Length: 148
Image (cartoon, rainbow, N blue to C red; front, side, top):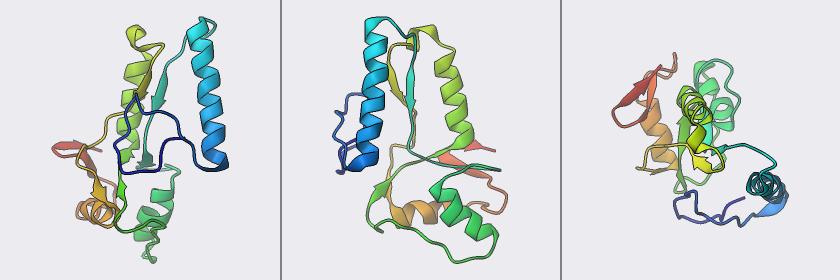
């Protein structure tokens, strides 16, 4: 849905989808935004990067990285080692979405959930997360922010 470049995404980033999935997401977002702007829908949009987290979190990162670590299997990272990535810990994403959804002044807007601004290349990002206690998923999302 967004440009595939090395710029940080913000609420002001224009849609520039690549591929069918991105085009469908853009059309869905435009439909919701149109209804919000017309006053027909009272809503807020929360966006987040790739999820990772405890328990039943369903994500590529959990499936190919963390679940494989727990099962002593080979890690599979289908991304370029040098491509910068951001991840969001699912409990953090849940809390942020709940806060935004319970804040009336936030409605009518699109929000990108906060992530660590120090994005890292894929290899470094996963290695930095692996330094922490992976087996029980106790690890930080952002520098100095530890959630369990």
